[in-house]
Length: 92
Image (tube, rainbow, N blue to C red; front, side, top):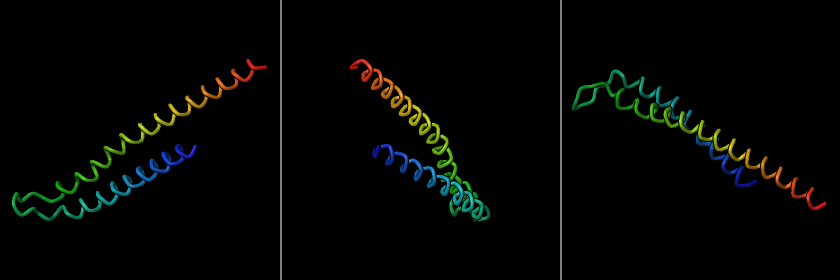
């Protein structure tokens, strides 16, 4: 049970961090639109936008994975409880 709580806590922290990273990353990228890089003379927006885009992609990967893991664990618990109930009734 404690292991499950730690896993859930880490998932919540990860998703929260990614949401903050996406939000502030887009703000930073938007503010750098008018600044040009020294060497290539392209807007620095294209450099800074990689951070929120990467965080967003990771968020899209992390949430379904967490849901899948939670469903798998839940089904294992339910099948384990059903097996324990069956074993208990056989002993009587």
